Amino acid sequence: MYLRFFIFLSCSLLFTLNTYTQNLKVAYNASVGISKISYKEEVILDVYKNIGQPFRAEGYKIIKRGGETVFAYSHLRKKHWDNANKKITFIYDWGSYSCQYIQKGDSLYFNIQMVNTHPSDTFAGVGTRLVTTALGELPSNFKQGVHYNGNNIQSPAIVKAVCKNFQMVVENPDARNYAYAGLVSYGKNNGYSIATGNRPIGGITGFDQASELRLAPGKTAAMTLVVKFVKPGTSIEVVNAKLISDYRRERPQLIRWQDKRPIGSLFLASYSRDGKEKGNPRNWVFSPSFQKGKGEQKFIDFKKDLINYADRSISILKKMGAQGMITWDIEGQEFPHAITYIGAPELLEKMAPEMNKVIDDYFRRFSDAGFGTGICIRPDSVIINVKSGKVYHVAVKDPAYTLIRKIRYAQKRWGSTLFYVDSNVEPNGGPMPARIFEQVARACPDALVMPEHITLEYYRFTAPYREMRSNIFLVNEAVKSIYPNAFLVLNTADGINRKRMTDEALLELLKSSKEQGNIFLFRAWYSDQPIQDYIMRTMENKTNQKDGNR
Image 1 (spheres, rainbow, N blue to C red):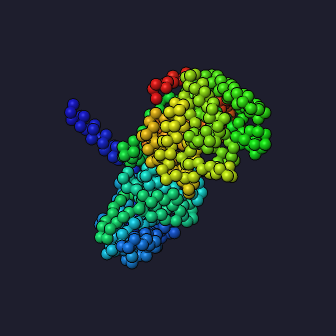
Image 2 (cartoon, rainbow, N blue to C red):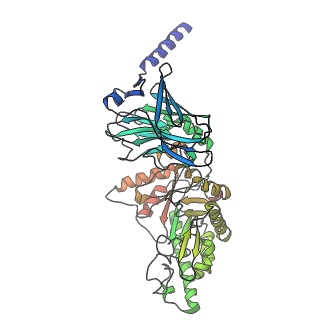
Image 3 (cartoon, rainbow, N blue to C red):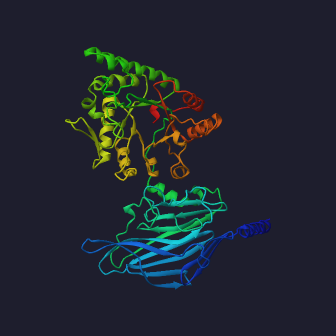
């Protein structure tokens, strides 16, 4: 019996080993290191047939002893090939750069070592094209001429090119190493450089200074980059399981909001140039009597109109089974875009004194009806020029403190828990660093924060705001692979495009979005059909956890 089992096991193992075919083939040359790469006989690099290009180091940065910063292009002095270890070493004016190639099945590892040979200057890094492949086709997940890279800072350094016969995945497998990994569009025949480094090469976008080295004279820095070839359809979770696990452990998800019922959006104002001429300078849309009223009666009617607006909205929130609402424009819309949204509740008395008198009753109406409340805030300061009457949004040194201050103000005054964050951008137009929202999440754990602009790491701390009219319904694969519980807040307003999809397709997308745990945001001051009906049909038969389970 044992003999038969041993023979069976031996045959099974032999069969398993024999059925695996190594599809990746790599050739080397003393002059260039890697000279040829093919996968399933499809050649994507052959430097002697002008298919792709070999290794190339580009710009570097050094910091001189006196503090002067120097940027220059790498000039090769000499090179050495170690055939036994498949290792090539390049000597440059700034130091040495060696790369050992190790093939493991259909994966190719680049073990890189940099040595600063300068006697006094600090080496800050260099950008390199390890090889430039010629894929022959535009990967189905790429756009022509666009460059793709990650750096293990705000997202794992994983870039995937989906081709017809294979996927090529580039990865920096060390979650604590911030050198970027990427595929940079370069050359003809859909050429993509397998790029890495601590300084940007031509085409790298969004370079983060945290990627730089500070390598003292005589010191060495090491890193690894790996290129994996897998069959189409293989998920990132499978291909890059270890890096994803390490990244998640280094940067755990903090958001714990369990209530996934819809949220209503309410707008109290809408900018119009002629508002002031009509006696309605802050352009309140809910109170036509405010434009015509006189004296104290004007403010009595204003409050009546606001409460009626609240009561109509409450009936819709109840019908929709909502968890709460977010109100935009409590300060009105006296000013045009891009300063329309003030997002400064503490300035309400100065900017809209008529609203300041009645807003507490407005929010209390919703709270008494069992709904959470929220407002729009911004991570900046508002400067009011008394003489001109103009308003300016001004960047602050500590946006996290500003957001926390505004959230706590709204929590203390109205018990608010829902916060849409408008214009969370840097001066260069990119999203603010995710660490700002980490501080907010730690200081205000009982608040649901919905930022307008995002990076992947925002999902650790927030429920990012996305719009259905931009054809977004789901948290993407890359985010879900790292944070399975990540979710977004999906604004459904104006999201139905009859030309783009059928009713059945729309309902399926909404269902998929709900199953991901996403929250639907809908207009709640009137019966906005048919989207409200679609949301209700999507949410039916779902057991929702209430506020106490957040």
